[in-house]
Length: 309
Image (tube, rainbow, N blue to C red):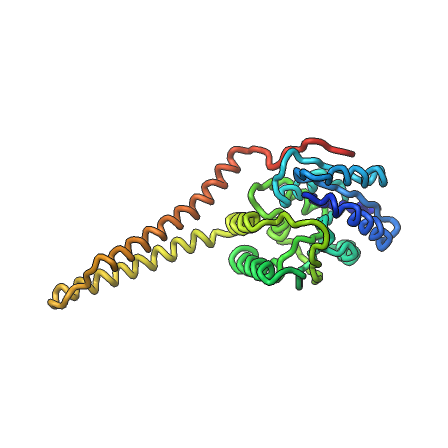
């Protein structure tokens, strides 16, 4: 009897849970009769009634629901890692609590898993978001695809179905400041992509702020690529080459008696440009050094306040 663990990170989803739980339970009827279900619901430090709604869900379906209440907000990807750590299924799926991802797609994912595929992703072929959200998301995923993980699909993914073996590997890695789901792709198992249109959030307000998006962008690059360091090296070499050419021009002008280029303004522009690049380079290197410090401290990625089993 295969067991499916459905991992759902929850953050200020008190209004969503009553509707989401109904869709999830209805979705069970689409699976084979021998499949059993486990819901691992992770409250990521919500300050609304999310936990109360999760407890109601557990009361209505005893023995099927596991609630992991974290002590504070650690971000959705760390909450997903907490859910993986407590999931006990033969296979797992991560889905959003606000129904932007269709639960019905799990059935197709499960069919691929039965055929031996260990990683199945719901590929966002399109999304019902604003123009600027689409631009940011598409730019982020194209850059990650080009410079970090070339095996992720266009549009990226947050809706993912994976085998217990992959779950155990990611839990064992236990990496901080990363995109937990993209670690699954980094493992390099064969992957199947199922395109779908990500729906617009209808209930509640998204807490996925610009600041969190920028942090994810930085984390993803530093976790999976050394392209920023290559950029510093290439730019430094380029500036050095330009400086060499400029020096040769000045020497030639000196010996030919021509007027040498002078000017306080032009000199200041060069100094400010080089200084700016140095500060940017130090900032990028500092990000890598900081993450090494974070890893060496071995502080827990999340702290569990209470478990409802």
